[in-house]
Length: 377
Image 1 (cartoon, rainbow, N blue to C red):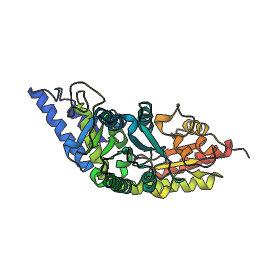
Image 2: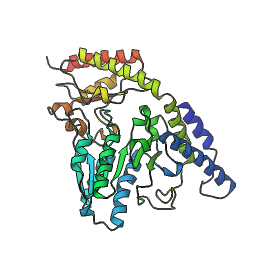
Image 3: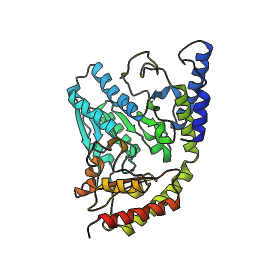
Image 4: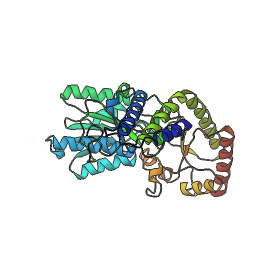
């Protein structure tokens, strides 16, 4: 966690009042919450009233998707006549919501990426129907890092709206993208955008959902009516303060850190390609977040590779951390096509603030040795 985020949290922890109360302690807490909300809004290029505070990206995704579904159904549209679009490579917190919508009678289309992991605007356009009410496309994939063309997708959605004289809400799970990409929500053309502090070197357990005036939602958590009635539960003033400071901190270093990590990632990729026969990259390194590399190694299951690196004090994953232990293969890599072993043997390297050139050299050395030992000759 960033030092400034820790300091902000420690300071805000002294504000023991409920921000919904009118006594002095409550007013002080409310003032801190207001300032933090404004700081988060500034990073997203939106108004503070367009920010709904949540417990993290998973809840933000649930509120965006299921909150929209609930609003549509409550608004009188029978669920079986509504059409929803997402992609086959989304995070589990998005895919599970759409599977639930299918169970409730909604029609859902899952758009596949091309072999490089890209979701094209043309592919989304082909799925748009008169009954379409909602589209969700993650900004940058959490396993392969490929950045999706949200602005282009937004344009085809708006063109469809004009032709059909209808409203199609566009949502995106931003995940780790704001670490390395300027997250100006209105410029992206989205109506709903999910973000979380944990992906921005901030505290766990706090996130936000950007919502513009087009997007009507029904709450999925009921209670005291906080967050303009859309997310009940007393706001955690300290976590929000940490979120705001972390977001500001990563924004200041975004350009320099992106350049540094891209160079280290390219060095890692070159070293692994040179040392491991048959290695395949999953995704498109030229159109990816700078800190992520996903590869597949033939004839060596990903789990064995991860465990071997773990013993050497190097920590990677085979897929999204949320899918570790549940999915047998990476559903994202499987969607790219190719031979089945790619999804079974995928390895996800994630670089960060503590990654150094000497560390990259050590990773290359260890990976090359493991592949030489485990791959049959």
